[in-house]
Length: 289
Image (cartoon, rainbow, N blue to C red; front, top):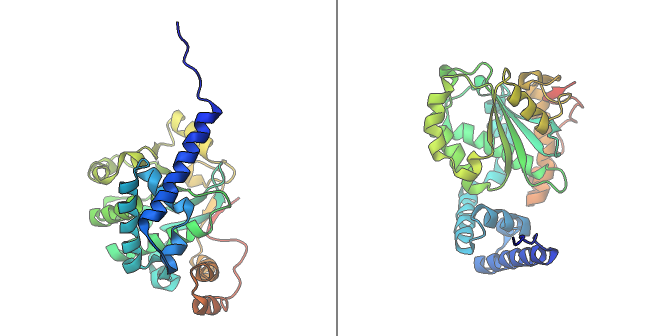
């Protein structure tokens, strides 16, 4: 019997070198960049687009060019909190003050607190929070986790299919490899009808990151423990902490963090105005033990 030899360090190094070369080739294929496009297209960014397209240079180039075109028209870095704050009044989407076990930023979503039916408003609100989460990721982290709490969700508070489809499209095509995990916590049985429609818009890679978790299922409970520390996790997700959302406090946090975002993108006028916002209290819209 012949035994298969394990992959050598040399092969791993060759693979790494090959991918580094593809990053360089992708940058060359994009041509000269300037302004925000140059700021956006870091080597890490190029790697994410190559990864999303299985390291196919042509497909990654097309995908990235479409994103640059989208960013030039949608202008996600120019969205300001006061423009989308109304969407966040109920706390339907907020950034947690804890990380998952791997140190990744966590966005908490509560569709049961849906307060508007505007597709554009919902999408701009989520894009704003995605951009914020990305700029505030811990060092060495490129991905985030989503916790979606279905408590209080009903057909009356359902997100329109058009909105869900728009969110999925933007997430998959313009924020590739940014999602590490999506937890759908305690979805009701009638969610299955909604899911049957939505899942057709989700690609395989994203679909594999989506986990259905049910509080009365032992395997589900154990799964949550592998992703999160129960002491930090809100009760709504089977943890021990309390989830409190204070819109005024969260608004002050967002205004303060816009200073960092403005400096990153070179909006000095915005940074100077945002700097005048009053300090943010220590306790912010998330889980507090």
